[in-house]
Image (tube, rainbow, N blue to C red):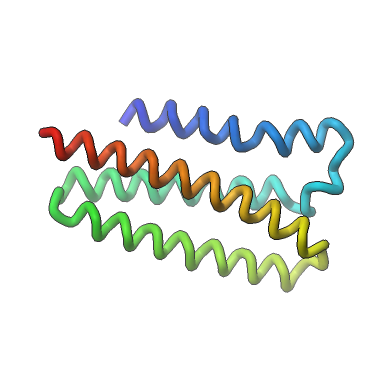
Length: 126
């Protein structure tokens, strides 16, 4: 579990670095309004889903795959709901929104899959 916390912290820093550099360098037009709020949402959601799946896999090894698929589906639904709410509330450049949104979604999903599959492999070796 300690390994997950360290990996999540490093991943979050690596994902936050390019937008922070762009913001600091005066390229704020590359970020949508409220980018850091959406960043926090993705970060928190990924953290909670990973913890839930890891906990579920430790409680019941046979349901690990089903819990993973259910959590991934839940994340997809929540993320699409946030995108819909955001697009209704703010009028932004569509291309900038898509690039920002999928930057966060894809990198956090890649981390989630890598971390959960590596955790699943550790349990299969037992």
